Image (cartoon, rainbow, N blue to C red; front, top):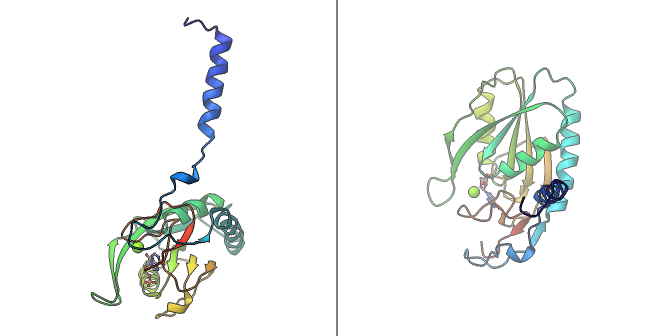
Length: 211
Ligand code: IMP
Ligand code: MG
């Protein structure tokens, strides 16, 4: 059979399986940021640092829910929190379920401060322990809208985790229960964060100069 005996085919199949698990991203293929109007940004948080902090956050969050009756509901805010929620969910050692909410924010140029619900949560939240998972808090308008909205569902408890916090730009007071990193007042992209839908897939968080 094609000049190979059974043992050789098993060896080939094993090699293929091993190859499947080895995933490397050559750094040369990382997209550059300078075709989006800004210049090449600097790495603010690299992927290992983000991963390390998420492990710590998962420990803090797990310790804050010693008396869970039902799985914690992670509410992921589309689209920016997708990567953070996925990594946090896998780092948590408590039972979780996930749901998704989407909003559109208009700042400055159009109707300043208006937040519009684009997609509501799918599951009933009444009497559930809910953790809102945000990518970044900037003015605080989006997060406070979301917290008010979820509170109307009368959850058993409602807490907030944010990967990034730009406190310098706050317009609305928001109580953040768990914070990943406090960052300076710079526009950042990567690890879910975008400008015009771009750069979400960067593994690290970078500043976008010129924004
Ligand atoms: P808010 O100003 O706190 O309401 O933030 C509104 C939204 O603006 C966030 O959920 C993000 O989607 C987006 N945003 C704020 N700052 C940044 C940033 O530095 N990079 C990318 N998106 C941002
Ligand atoms: Mg955005």
